[in-house]
Amino acid sequence: MKMRNHILRMVSVFFLVLVLGGCGMAVIFYIDSYIDVTDNDTETTLSGSYVVRNDEFNNLSLIKDDTGPSLWLGYVVSDSYTISTTSIVNLFNSTYGKNPYGRTINPFSESDPAVLTLSDNSYALFQFSDTNRSDDYAAPLYHATAVDHTSPEDTFTITKTDVNSTYVEFTLAFDNAKFVSHVDGGILRRFDGSRFRNNVTYSEILSNNDLLDYKISSTTSGKLYCHIFAAMNVTEGSFSNIYWTNLAYLGYLQL
Image (cartoon, rainbow, N blue to C red; front, top):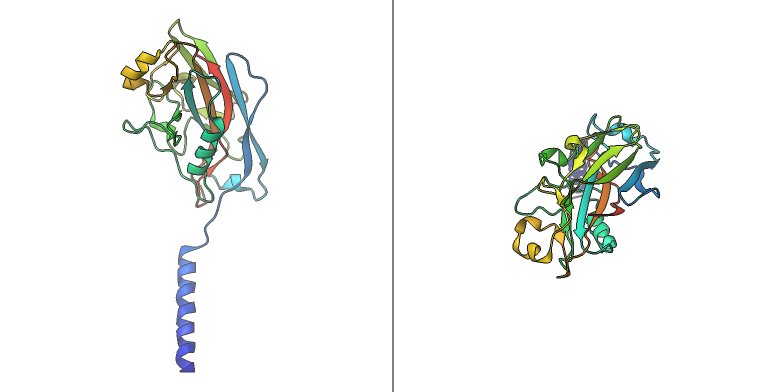
């Protein structure tokens, strides 16, 4: 009986070694990085800086060439300059950046275009697009990608321009050219590729399914605000997980 138990233990250890040797150890990509919301915002600009505070184990070198870190940008349009930013940030972090593995944001979907919706349906977060509604806004590229993945720190600015009395445009630019933008002409559009309107009314919201990204709570026409969020992502490389910084709230620009 003792000999049989010894043989069984030896067989169990043998198969365990095969499993571990075949699968290998999971490599988890992690760096201490974040988007710093800068203080030089104006009535027409919002900006943020990508900061790598610590890469103790040189994980940036594990990223596949031309795939990251990548900047993702989202927005909420509301008739209020105060919205549930903390709830949106927390839900994004728990949904997409959940440790240790994370998940990607799916490409645009006609049936479910919002990136996330709060449980009380008060607000939904949408992804910026452009005139082409490009699939580049899926992983791993999203809206912009670092030119050199080992040196990705840069500052980006989103600038609002009035096209006319009806439409406004947002333009994405980088200070030090350390990122290549995938946005056509640098001009950010609504989730469906259309321009942002500055004169949407409550009655239009009720009757127009194309305006589902506009959250207007009052029947009285008033000012509209575009609340802008950003996060940095790493998806592809010699590792097993998907990495996100915490979602950063950049602030709002009046439409």
